[in-house]
Structures are given as structure tokens and as C-alpha cells.
Amino acid sequence: GDSVTQMEGPVTLSEEAFLTINCTYTATGYPSLFWYVQYPGEGLQLLLKATKADDKGSNKGFEATYRKETTSFHLEKGSVQVSDSAVYFCALSVPAGGTSYGKLTFGQGTILTVHP
Amino acid sequence: EPEVTQTPSHQVTQMGQEVILRCVPISNHLYFYWYRQILGQKVEFLVSFYNNEISEKSEIFDDQFSVERPDGSNFTLKIRSTKLEDSAMYFCASSLRLNGEQFFGPGTRLTVL
Image 1 (cartoon, rainbow over the protein chains, first blue to last red):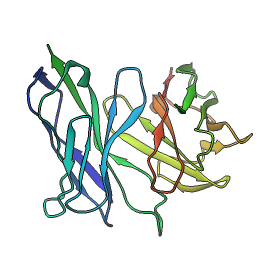
Image 2 (cartoon, chains in turn blue, yellow):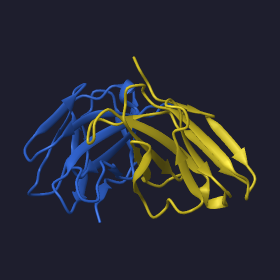
Image 3 (cartoon, each protein chain N blue to C red):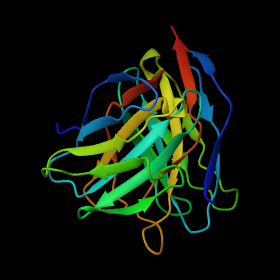
């Protein structure tokens, strides 16, 4: 079945450091890929997405590129801020059709803490 | 900005009791989902719902679980006889289109004693 694997956490960085959170996937179809973020006490929010190979999703300084050849969708940010402290989830969705109705398959989540 | 809301934020119940978790999706959305996250584990899909019926469900979603959209605004998840292993954070999500962005609620933490 479909699955997503994220790098083990937690990740602790100093402000302005470079961030990478690795994500790889396996899927039977041609999935769309997502990064969701969860701030303390809140629900999951879509951070960025990519729907086809070589697409780059970007938002709030975060970027991730859909790499079909390595089945990866690593999240990067050049300079993190304290306000980026949150839990980050990589996820995939196989396009609707057949037995799929848009469900999301998530990785285990990575806790990011950024210190001043 | 429209948002998905969930009540209660925390529910404590005794094993064997029935619980109903409530969600109010974004008003013009058509697709509805429940997910859960057991502490320290992945967010897992439970069920999707469209046009007043279940469109897909996972292996977790057995006969103890049911969903309903009773009045056109609420979307509920019922667990008929709770088990200890049902303790988790339950997230509701809604989407305007199939494969569109899913908007999540803040979750209900269910604790089964």
C-alpha cells in the first residue's frame, strides 16, 4: 500500500539556520504530495503541495520539489525563525478513481524547535 | 476566514461507553474526512464521506464506528463501545473538491479509561 516515511525527529535549530526535513514515499499510482504544519493547539494546515514530477511547491519561505526518480519530497527553508516551531507532516494523496477518494496518507511527523 | 471546528476539544470516557465527536466543516464543502493520531504515531485515515454516504474507509473503521451528517452542517463520528486503544486525537477535515485541499479542524483528544 501507499506509505510515507519522514526523517526521525525532533529537530532543534538556532534561528536563521538552514532546515531540511526528509520525506520519501511509496505509492501505487501517481500521487500528489503535500507538507502540512501543525502549530501548538491548532489543526493541520496545508503548507505547500506539488502534483507532478519536478514541480516545486513553496510557501512562507519553505520549498519542496517532487522528485519522482528518488520518490522524495524533502522540505527546505533557508533561514528558520522561532515562529516556525511546529510539527511538520509529509503526506500523499493518490488521485481519485478506482478505490481512492482523496484520502491523505501521512508520515509520522517531525517536531521542529527553533531557538532564538 | 472559514474554518473547521470540532467539539469537544477533550473527551474522557469509560471503556465500553459510546462517544460522539462533532465537527462543523466549512459550509460549502462537499467532501468530509475523519483521521486519528494515536500519541506518538502517524495520522491515520479513518473514513471519507460524500453525498451522504461513506465513499472510502480504512481497516480501522470497523462496525464500532459510524459517521453521519445529520443536519447539513454537522459531521459526526460515533464510537459505539469505546476501547482503551481508541484513545487518540481525532481530526475532522473537509474539502470543496475531490483531491482539493483538505482543511483540518483542531482535533478532539479522546481518552478512554
